[in-house]
View 1: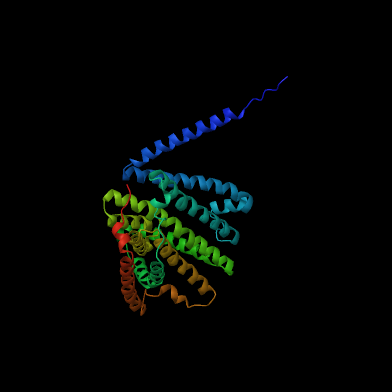
View 2: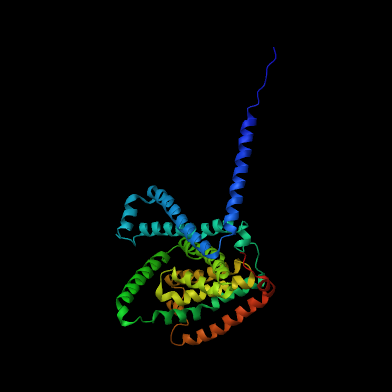
Amino acid sequence: MSSISHDHSQPFTTSLSQLFIFAQNIRKMLRAIFKEMKPFPQLMFAIFVVVASFIVFMLISLVVAIPIFGFESMMSIAGGIDVFSGENIALLKYFQVVQSVGVFIVPPFILAWLYYGKIAEYLQLNKTATTQSVLLVLILGFSAIPVINLFGELNANMKLPEWLSGVENWIKTREEMAAELTEKFLKTDSFGGFLFNLFMIAFLPAIGEELLFRGVVQRIFSNWTRSLHWGIWIAAALFSALHFQFYGFIPRMLLGVMFGYLLVWSGSMWLPIIAHFVNNGVAVTGMYLIDKGAINPEFEEIGSSGDGIYFSVVSIAVVALLLWLIKRENAPAAKEQRYLQ
């Protein structure tokens, strides 16, 4: 009596094949829809993706945080009770990291895949910067400190009309609270704490904010206005506005403009990322060294007052020279730079 072998794997293989074909068809359909999408719908959908990603990451982080930090710590922060205690600061730092990933890092990759398909090319991560350009950007980051401080001081001394005095007082109160929180965030006695602050305040924002604002938002507005310059300035203004710090709006916007031109001139996202990291990293390192007594606290105000004004004048000249050198170094890339519809 012969035994008959039945092959049960064939239906399973067929099902997988059909599922793969279905997924491919869905992918093609989505690609066709998003490829034809105009700039305004792209912007609206980008906002939707950012908000949706934020909600998803926050919900997941809340679930993860309860067993780690405890429900009481979360309730005390929600109620504004003892917010600046050591344990609660650790919880706030945890949420800060989650927010950086969920709002700024993940959405650009999703949008790049949907809008163009080739993520690295859309976000301009596929081109490495030249060694000379990187060195120039590193020098640029340090050289820009006095002039950025000068514009920060001018911005801080701006006065709103008398009839908006209530709004002005509210803004000042909110920004004083934000400054206190930032100080608590950055205050650490250990080198490990300093490295984590560098990761949280410099590394993650440099990657995430550049990918979102320069990689996505700047591209959308450049295509919308058909002008790279308008795209750069609008994205920089939004970049600054979304930090919700009125008295730091101008210097932060100017930094955004500088980052935007670095991207356009080089065709590489890595230059604005490096420049952003240097800017934030200097602030984190400066506060750490000040707390350690290694440098004078006046370091934070260099260029903003008194004899420091002369530093600002020199800073403007040096920054202009460095930007010109970076543009010249990357002239072929700047000539070929085109945003992709």
